[in-house]
Length: 111
Image 1 (tube, rainbow, N blue to C red):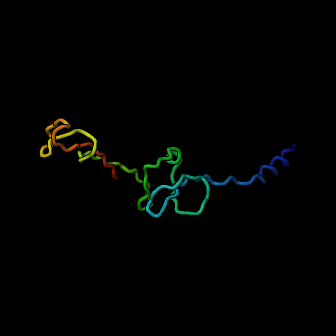
Image 2: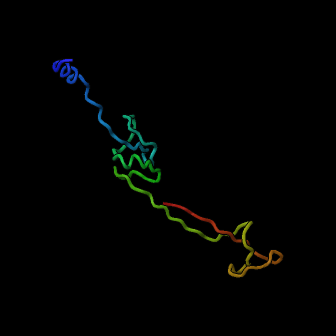
Image 3: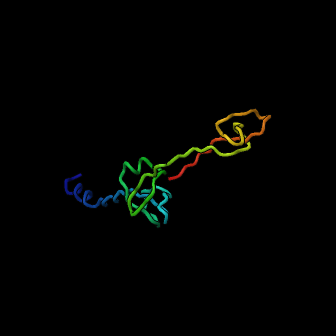
């Protein structure tokens, strides 16, 4: 192969397509999927490390990616199962043979 043939081949090589990373999301900012394809839908451009993490605990707000922090609250609630307590004082544990109200823990999560 001559130098001219090499240069002719080199000049005919097509330009590579640009690489982009996208997070597609719904109207509420909930992530739908991460993609490197040009697909129809609402998306934001993200960087490669964010794309690699592929986190689902994020939201899109005002065009920016925001990590959701969950707030957890645990409360005592009346229940059919749980610890039997005095009907007027939850701090007094009583036998199941006495009049009682059963209490158990319930965990609430939100963002």
